[in-house]
Image (cartoon, rainbow, N blue to C red; front, side):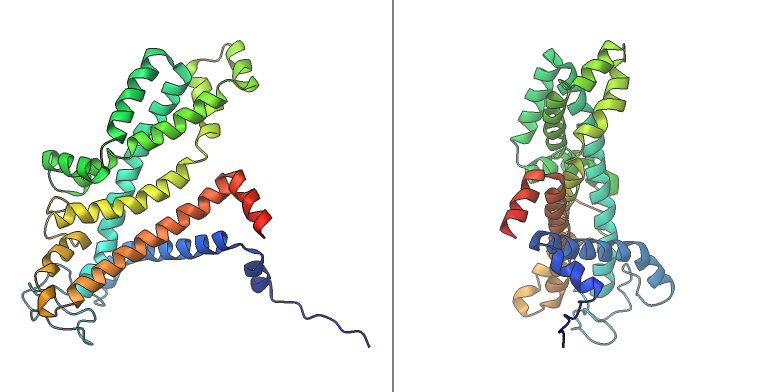
Amino acid sequence: MAITKRRLPTFLQFGKSLNLSQKLMLIGLAITLFFIFLAFFTPLFQAWGWLQNPKDFLSNPIHEPPSTKHWFGTSRLGYDVFSRTLFGAQAALQVVILATALSMIIGVPLGMLSGYLGGKLDKVLLFLMDSIYTLPGLLLSVTLAFVVGRGILNAAIAISIAYIPQYYRVVRNHTVSVKTEVFIEAAQAMGASTWVVLSRYLFFNVIQSVPVLFTLNAADAILVLGGLGFLGLGLPEEVPEWGHDLKQALEALPTGIWWTTLFPGLTMTFMVVGLSLLGEGLNEFVNPRLRRENRIRK
């Protein structure tokens, strides 16, 4: 009598075929999608009466511990910590996506122009970007935040300045290596303009690493935004933001009021971890060398 092996379900076979890096990437993707879900649907939850307005505080008791009425307790001003923690995801994603998009929109074209044209423009931009890159990102953002003031757009501008050199350096280096390829020389010989070469032939060949950089910068930008909020330089006080809430909570922490610090800090940590795992997993797909190394280990 022949013995037949039982076949695993399809989803178990898929999970078994993934390496550790890919599994961690899926975990990071799930965490990131969860926070995107919160950012989009938290206002609807409030409109349906499931969440308290994060700006209401006069009707709530002060420093009430977690309960069925206030799941994460209340702060020293009477804010509902659960509501402000969820709405903090919305503020964080707005600022972080805007900041990383601004830095990408500026850094990618400058890197392509610098790498393709070369000459004095390349030297000047290299010197400028290297000078910015040597400065600590948080210090640079804090200094710029003093100048531009508070607000979602202003905080995004203050954060984005530190990431422009990263996009510039990555795209410039790729452009320098790709512009000597045969298909670029053929396009130039056919009389293609600089704009045509950059947009049609170079762009999609030099941006492979940009999505990875975008994701990793988004994770770092959440921490920078938290630092700005902690210093009182991020968003206006009435806007729910994790860094500002942590600053308000630290004064009560020595007295045993732990919930006002734990939940915003833990939520910020989960969001950073999710984006970091997603970025590291994307890096494996973009980098062929890492894929080969993982296949050898398996």
